[in-house]
Amino acid sequence: MKKYLLIIIIIALIAGAAYFIFTAPPTTTIAVSPQTWVIEYKENIFIPKEIKIKKGDTVIWINNSSESPVWPASAFHPTHNVYRGFDALKKINVGESYSFTFNKIGVWKYHDHLNPSVTGVVEIK
Image 1 (cartoon, rainbow, N blue to C red):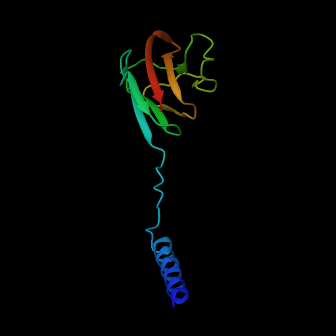
Image 2: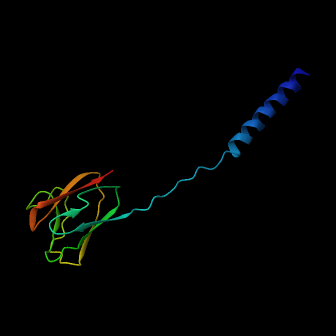
């Protein structure tokens, strides 16, 4: 009798464990798509001056000044080598834009190569 009771208890424990294992809610992963951010250049200022984004996000610099071109580039002037590749490599005229996708975590300073006193910061988390 004790032998049968022990077998029934073991079967019940196995069945209970199987129930909890196989009926657990499935885990879901939510994929977050990279985002695009806009920085506007107007009369010798970047708006916003500082921006916080995520790795893989893209920033677009749009020249909305009344007449002057802009040349966004990584610090330091004139080498632009703090974040290699982050350099428009040319003037961005009124109405034009330049985009760059940030794939390195950190705080990245940039400037207008044509007017190095105009600066901004992109922070990537």
